[in-house]
Each structure stands twice: as C-alpha cells, then as structure tokens.
Length: 274
Image 1 (tube, rainbow, N blue to C red):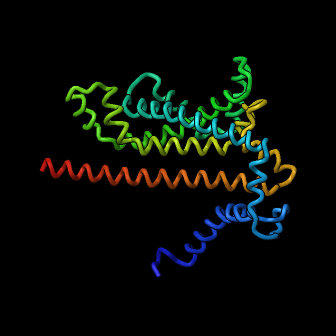
Image 2: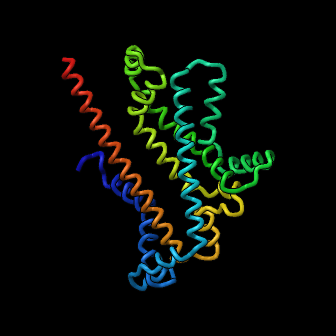
C-alpha cells in the first residue's frame, strides 16, 4: 500500500464523504417513499413528485427562485467580470484598496449582517420589498464570487494576445469581445454557475429582503419544515439537487472541451510558426 494512503487516511476520506453526502443520498431515496412518514420506508413510489407539481404554493416559490437566480447570476457575472478586469488591468488608481475591499467584503461578511444592511438600505430609499429587492440583494453578495473566479483566470492571461490584436488595428472593445472574452469564457461561465447556485440556495438574505409575492423556494421549504418534513419537500430538494448536479456536469464537459480545443489551436499555431 502506498504510504501516503494509510488506513487512517482512507478511513478519514470515507467518513468525510459519508458525512457530507450520506444525508443527501437518504433524502433522495426517501423522496421515492410510498409512505407519508419520511422516516418509514413503505415501498417505491413516485406519487410525491406528482403531489409536488400539484402544490401551487411550492411551484410559485420555485418559479420565483428560478427567475431570481437567473437574473441575479447574469447581472452578477457582468458586474463581477468588470470588477475583475478593473482590479487586474488597472493596478494603480486612487481608491483601488477601497474598491477591492468593497468588492470582496461580502465574501467574509456574515449573511445576517448583509441581509440586515440591505433591508435598512431598501427601507431608507423607500423601495418596497419584493422580487426586485431579492434580486438586487443576490446580485450584491454573488458578484464577489464571480470576481474572484474571473480574476484568478485573468492573472494568468497572456496580455501579448491583446497587444497583437490592437497592433493590427482592433479597438479595445473589439479586442475584448474577440480575444479576451473567448479565452476567459470558462471562468465566466463557472462564475455564472456559482452565482446561480448560491442564489438558489440562499435563505438568510432572502428572508430579510423578500416581501409579499416574492417567497423563494428555500424560504417556503424552511417554513414547512418547522411544522414537519413531508415527502413533497424531499421531492423538491431532489429536483434541485438534480438540476444543480446536471448543470455542473454539463459546464465541466463544455469547459473541458474548450480547453482541449484551445490546446489544439495553440499547438497548430506553433507548428505553423515553426
């Protein structure tokens, strides 16, 4: 046996993964339970998925969550990419330290403080809590995650590609969309997926900033769990797990193919030059 893989190390890894994923596996299994009691197995059945789709309140909350997640992830990706470009390309400007701190503050700020601060802001400006405030709040806290992912890619970006494009007459805007963006696109897509997942999962900040008609699915599930877990909730959580897992797998495959194609193009260019 490899000395780096001792029995203790293997047992630690197995127990760690079991602690993380065994509850999720049990949740998925009991979503197909025939019995209404979620802790008693009474046979395989998919009837609770049908009950879930007939539960109008849960479906409305899921639709709100999907719209908020999509819009907030899209705007957070745009703003986060712009912030990453500013921090990477413009290393010397007045207020850079303050700007960097403001961009990355939500990473270390407790969600309770972020949610309460945004609530006070919306009340101060007279903005009624609802779909718009939840979306703005999710953009605020997810933008920093996108900025971190994109900035890490820009740090290793070959600036000579941009310089060559501009030497050939391309404008900075054209250079960004035709040279820079295609190269950093895997990081941008990863940032979007991360922001989308964080928005789907958020409960604390949405609880502070939501209002009538803007109840998200995590809030709805939490309010029902306090009265007892039902198989419908297990079914809803299983669908969310499936959506997130499918998205991650698809994005991983796409990014892998893009990376392979990029390496092929680089090797072909080196052969032509040689």
